[in-house]
Length: 179
Ligand SMILES: Cc1cc2nc3c(=O)[nH]c(=O)nc-3n(C[C@H](O)[C@H](O)[C@H](O)COP(=O)(O)O)c2cc1C
Image (cartoon, rainbow, N blue to C red):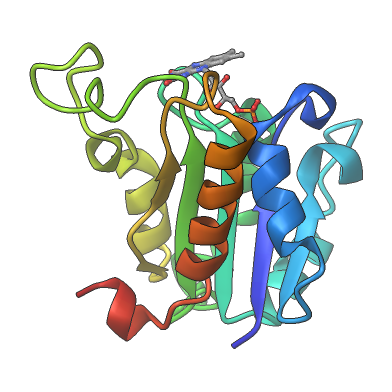
């Protein structure tokens, strides 16, 4: 299975969590890792190129720090620009059909906080719904997300362990991941 990971972090230089996740998969021959903020410093997304790339992969992972209960803005723009009418949805818009998508995020909040009654009231699954529906609206297969919680407090050992769990998660066959 060919997998592309699109990393969207506005400041990877100061990142600990996303950098650890990224480093773990960077040299994996089965995974193509792309740093969106580095590729498009001017935010001028090459839509044709992105669409062409999507066609070549079976699984697409979006990796990002959780910002205001959503993804960083360049990734939102990427969805707006790349998932076009007539290509991703609507008439003839079948190009993402059957492709697998995984969201992978790191949160400042703890796992306890992301539940009913917790500080953040909602689970990550609930908060991911707009992106989930964007993907399913385009007939993509939305697979269970990966989350590293408490990402501002993590020790190096915690991030090393999370990075291994991440590499496993994004390579597990969908039949196993959903059960
Ligand atoms: C602008 C901004 C918004 C943030 N919003 C959230 C949020 O909604 N929920 C949360 O749990 N953490 C939030 N955080 C914390 C980040 O998710 C956290 O710092 C990040 O996941 C750490 O990963 P890194 O080491 O790769 O930067 C926010 C941080 C910033 C800078």
